Amino acid sequence: YQAENFRSGIMAVDAGQFEAGHSLGLKYGTVMTSIILPQAVKNVLPAIANEFISLLKETSISGYIGLQDLTQGGMIIRSITYEAMIPLLAVAVIYLVIVLILTWLVGKLEKALRKNER
Image (cartoon, rainbow, N blue to C red; front, side, top):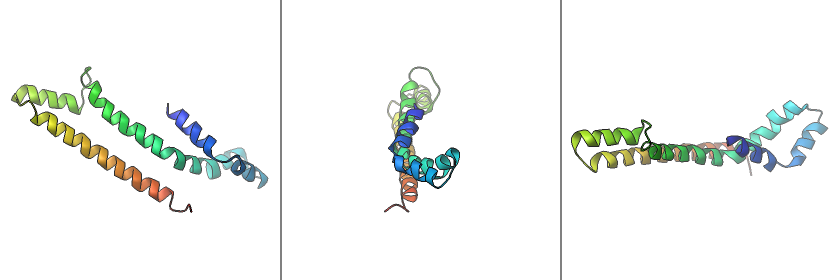
């Protein structure tokens, strides 16, 4: 699935960039690694970050299916302490903090990558 994100990022780079690299006598690999891929990563970064955050959120749903994760840990604590809401609220706050931190980090990374663009 991420391959499609990267493919679309590469396709979003103008074909003239590739032609310019060839006109300078650069080989295909050099054009891709030095010209095309750095621009493609800037284009793809938001989609990859969204997929990562979605994956993090969806693991809480899969906890009900049987995988051991944070939500399942909250359910175990809930069954031991007989507290209905406190463990689940704690899990929700932990997920919120993780998502906010990841969103902030991705924003900083995007800003750093786009610093040289005008």
